Amino acid sequence: MRKISESVYQITLGPVNAFVIDDNGLTLIDTGYAGSTDRIFKSISKAGKNPEDIKRIILTHLHPDHAGSAAEIKRRLNIPLLAHELDADLIENGTGGRNPKVLSPGLLNWLVFHIFIKRAPMKTEPAQVDQRLTDNDVLDIAGGLQVVHTPGHSKGHIALLLQEEGLLIAGDICANFIGLELSTIYEDMAVAKASLSKVADLDFDKAVFGHGIMIRSHASKKFKKAFKR
Ligand SMILES: [Zn+2]
Ligand SMILES: [Zn+2]
Image (cartoon, rainbow, N blue to C red; front, side):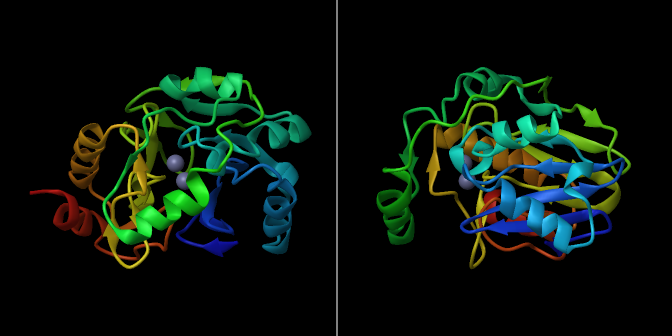
């Protein structure tokens, strides 16, 4: 795993990223597709940390590339799972997404949709959500980890703002491959754009994404430029 800021690390799991915050034990944010547990644990061990120190899992949203290994990790370590209240019921019954899936413009999105998303199972292993999060909850991790409810990609999507380190963990509100761009799919594009505008008004220097590469500086300015008009 790669160090992103004072206490945050990124684990790349094929096409999707998960994150670890090292403070008050380890906090795992997102879990990759089903079957990612060993890769996550190895990655943590390789960085000289102990996977058994994972104390909690937070999911940015219910999709199978983020929630896929949550049930297995929870079972192995017997730790609590946290997710937004509006995705919690679906995570608990193993539903990996909602319809409709509104496709963003562009050839790349079309390809990603038809090659990966269309065929991906809409199911995940059911996992009990032990703490249901709401907008503006602040978790006692690394000086305060703020929950930012950002619906649109999924109804219960959250981004996480680590205030002290000026870092936004954006989840899938957008992607950043060759610059900030819309995610491939949304449940509701208008709601998603309102969430992007809300996030752009926050103050953060760095940003990391479920899909794509990190922004190392002036990140909220870049969000404003890309998503505010
Ligand atoms: Zn997603
Ligand atoms: Zn994703």
